[in-house]
Image (cartoon, rainbow, N blue to C red; front, side, top):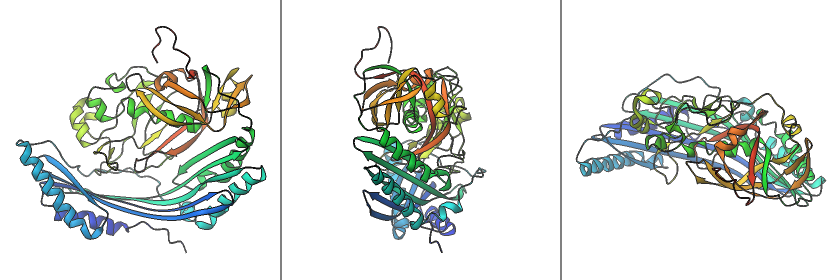
Length: 465
């Protein structure tokens, strides 16, 4: 019998949240319970070196006094009441220091979307099933003279929110994930994926494909400098799309008048580019509501290349007013560790297109295939320019076929500039996690575009990056 269970059963999670609301002496209160029970099979070389079970539970209390909000959090159920009183004391202090009413609020109840969050195949994705996949990866690497290292896991994610305005919601979702790096005599390949359903990972096929790519990647030549037509694999494409919130699709930036969302309706990408934050999609990590209990909405960033709108929470929705989503939160409140609360695009999704990846490559006379990017950083928010390096199974493309494997190459590129050049979209979507974002994922297909710049070649005169 499976013991796969969340840290708290749903009734207990809601009871904890609602009791904390009652215990908090403030004008308005919001309590969020986040739980996660994960099981991870980590392996390297010829052994499973770190089977790991992790259970996490956090209770966060937002107290509001005279319109001024403060938060306190605990990981101990024995200290929830104390934490609620501490949040109220902090809010009272802020209100006294401000000397005037503030504008903080808590959410109100609303209808939640119906999503498929529980998958029996993931519940059955036990240690035996995960060890079998780890063994397949390790044997596959060894048979070609290489090594494989990675992780296969399953988890249960839980969220409950109660507010003094009557919200009382709970969600519980399965999650399956895997990552793998295969190294063979200097050639490397990487795979990462996640989904609510373990079957959807098709992990066995992905492992075999990674071994083949690593084998083909032996004898890498230096990445040549220059501008190229590129085919970005789903992981590399997802890495670029993950920067869209940083260039303006965030309520905070939009409210400050910074970034691409200051020009809604403008064309900033190819007509083939439709991407947004969609926690209701059947890929990535769908979830019905956010940390404030607000039902999730799909938020279009780029609709056939045209600028849409940013994600918001209660505070940024109020700051933006009626001009964005009618002044209502889109359901993207988030709290990251050691960061102030802010709206976060946690489920970025670009739908698949019509073209197999092999056909995207076949349409390139001379270019580069990029499996993934690494150490990417934002350089210029207004120009949407990022920098980073390519990594793992990257190849030159010659006459429509993968040719010589190439080593790591430094790039500096405008994300929107590249999306403006896209002329082909792959027919398979793959998801990857987003670091430090609760329940965060980016799901993307392969993309083909032009003018992608590797190395230190100077920009043409008058051309912005």
